[in-house]
Amino acid sequence: MGDKRPLGPAQGRPSLLASALLWTFLLAAYLYPQFLFPIHNPNERARSYMTAAMFDHGTFAIGYRKPAKQGRGFVDEGSVYDRWGYVNDKALVCDDPALVPPDCAGTLYSAKAPGTSFLGYPVYAVLKLVADALGREVSQETILLVLRLFTVVLPTLLLLSLFRRFALRAGFDPVLSDLATAGLGVGSMVYTYSHMFAGHQVTAYLLFFALLTAWRSRTDDRPRWPAATGFFLATAVSAEYPMALVAVVLVAYQWFCRPRPKTILWAFLGGLLPVLLTAWFHVAAFGRPWRTAYATLENPGFVRDIAPGVMGLREPRLENLFGAFVAPYEGLFFFAPWMVLCIPAIIDYVVRRRRVEPPQMRALFFTGATALLALTVFISCHSLWRGGWTLGPRYIVPFAPFAALLILHWASLWSRGAPLVSRMVVAALVLVSVLVTGASSLVSQGFHTAFFNPVTEAVLPLLREGFVTFNLGHLAGLEGGWTALPLLVLSVPGLLFLA
Image 1 (tube, rainbow, N blue to C red):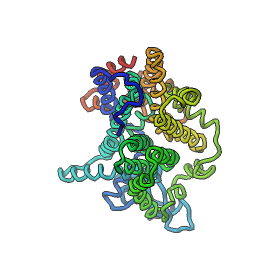
Image 2 (cartoon, rainbow, N blue to C red):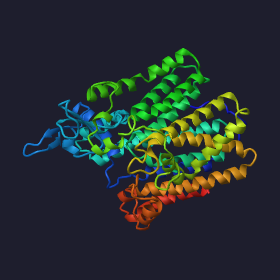
Image 3 (cartoon, rainbow, N blue to C red):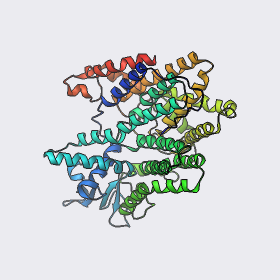
Image 4 (cartoon, rainbow, N blue to C red):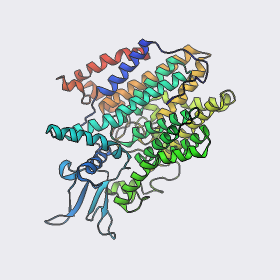
């Protein structure tokens, strides 16, 4: 997905030792923890319910709300509900159109955008077919682990590989390229949400894949590249509707890379399947191809949360920006301080570099910066910007790979005049980010809004007590904090490399 021609003077390649240390660190960080928390995350459970309903019951419905046989009230049953029980984040389509949720009989659906559930369908199908052939029952925990592995974890590792390969082929500083790859992989929200069967990280890798395929189409006129761009963009929007803002930016970039009508035609054809699947779900569940679950949310609290504005979007607010980027309870720059470098990168580009870079690199940088702006505007207008239990602003996880690319580009230009200083600054910030985000993620994938500083109030106390998420060490018979020892052994050489 990357052009082989460097964009600037080649600055060498990483040594085999550096590559080995980096990938040992990344593979250990991604494959050793299993992230099975006692807190059941409705974000991924609602999506997995829909995936299971499609394969096991041939329907999008995850259950049905019926009047209770005795007394007043209702009972939820049928479809996946009979097997896995209660789940939040669902929609209720009342049988009587004159009634509104939650006090009505009707059909229950996942209230999430369907893209992630569709991606999980073939994975779930293979898992169930193999289990049935072996005569084994598959637990809900196993299903979630497998769905995470094949729809989020492995694609994220592919994202990191392609990010690094693109950086090296573009002639970026090899040390900074490795630092940025490690920072993106473990020192950003990408790490936390790459272990969750939800749309946040799914959209991050899909949008970045779209950027790479559009870039490749500059020098390769085969239709596969714009078709792939269209597929990735449409699937990203199907997984998280607000990502349409970034998709528009990337469609414009695709046109810049190959400004021909047939390019847009192939992009349209590539995106047709995800669009049709999404429309199918909307029609089957809500009656219209453009109607989403927002109008039929079952939880009254969620209805109140998104009531301001249109679909929860209102005028921009500084409170949102402070909380999403700076505040210790959720701020992106608090948990991943190296990401703050995207600000001087953009300023420097606007003030000094735009007349120096070749047009294709200016366009790439401008596209990345515009994507960041779109995500920033979105989170500033979102009435539900806190997002409940979260580690970082989960609604804008795609911010991370675009910011990483801009930072790496800027730092590589900086390194041509001051290589030691640029590497030391980036290394220090990446190391802090890896320690903060990595340690926090090993304790929980999200923290209650009651915490002002989750790191000091929850992460450090729990780590002192030896609490870490379920991991391969537990399977080996280790207990408490000792389960993290193999992960530390595998990670320390990589952390020393970062330092």
